[in-house]
Structure formats: structure tokens, C-alpha cells
Image (cartoon, rainbow, N blue to C red; front, side):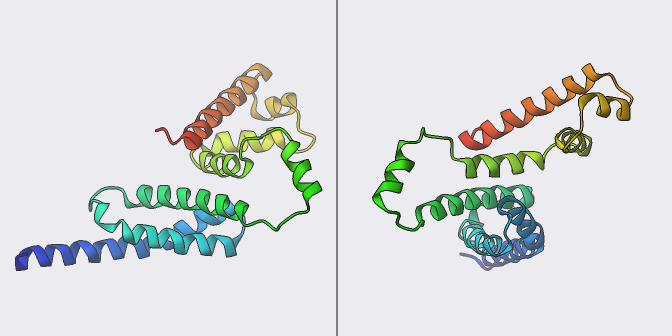
Length: 177
């Protein structure tokens, strides 16, 4: 390896460290939002940093570090939830049999994480409309009056938001772009 190659590799490593350290606060906030617990988020952030560091050579300087790191954090969060599920206390046989006899459900933790991730990608106006709709005691007609739109327009907007979220969640769960 020539001196120039060594210098370039050193510069690339320094740039990676700068990007990684600059991203810590945003990554922690993202993971904490997904998990809802800062202690768990701290653990997942450490794991995420280890993975990012191991894969540092795969990152191309000049591409979007934030997106790359966030996707890694997302998968580390899913892995954490999966591993936490495995680490449950041992139950008595009757309880295990009762739990086993229940119909299989989609992993709600993974779906919840995917939903939180997808909610982060919709507009503030769409988020506000969802908040208004699901606030206790709020009706479509009340929201329509407040927004000065027809009830049909509000229903259509909510349907489109739900469809977009559903498709995003499915992509997240299946790992498709």
C-alpha cells in the first residue's frame, strides 16, 4: 500500500468517525422513539454503533450517512425486540399451553416499530390529521368543520394516509424497497 493510499484510508476513516459521532443524538432519538425506553435505546445504540463500525468500509463517503445509519439502527432495534422476546421468564406448563393455543399473530413489536418508522416519513399535516381523528371524542364532521373541508374529503385523506402507512409497514416487514 502506497503512502497516498494510507493517507486516503486515514482520511476516509476520520470522515467516517466524524459522521458517526455527529449522528449519535439523532440515532439515539430515533431508537428511543421506536422503543419508547431510553435505557433500551442506549443499549441498541451501542449495538448499532458496533455494526456501523464493523461495516465502515462498506460506506461510501459522499453518500447519505444518515439514511444508512438509520436503516442499520432500525434493523438493530428489530433484532433487539426479537432477542428480548426470546429472553422471557420460564412459565409453568399450563400457561405455555394456553399461550401456544392462541392463534398466531404477526409480531406486534415488529409491526409497532415499522409503524413508528413509517409515521416518521409522512407530512406534518397528515400526522396532525391522524392525531385529530384518533383523539378521544373527535368526529369526522368536527374535523371537517375545523379544516373547512367536506367530510368526504377528510375521509378520503384519512384513507390515503392509512393506505400509505399500510404499504410502508408491509415494505418494512418484508424488507422490500
